Image 1 (tube, rainbow, N blue to C red):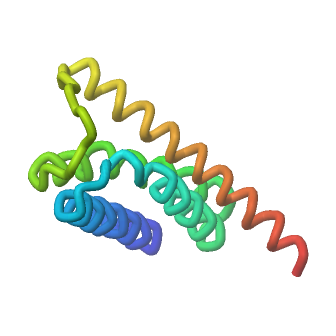
Image 2: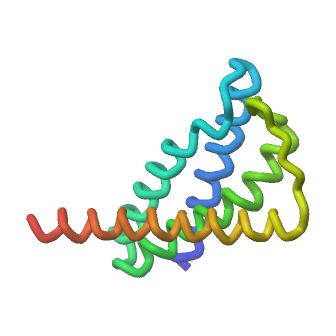
Length: 126
């Protein structure tokens, strides 16, 4: 049950981040894609937190889940907000959306792995 609760927390964090980032991007007119570094840092923190809660593998899973939420629900929220993009001429086909979901989920898993490794290294020092 704690696992499901923690995954819901991860989903909520990503949805709030995507909503806030989209709104700010739209009102201040900065390229929404420039927040990728911040999103990766958030996924690393989520991987660290996941590893601290349930172990190393869960850190990776948490990052992957964050990436999945970011690339699905976060993307749907982003479309509704219409954040600012510099020269966005992207054509969204089924294949491009599917590939984006796979790539962002994999990137989230990698960030989760980094967070889990950081947790393991810091936990050894105790």
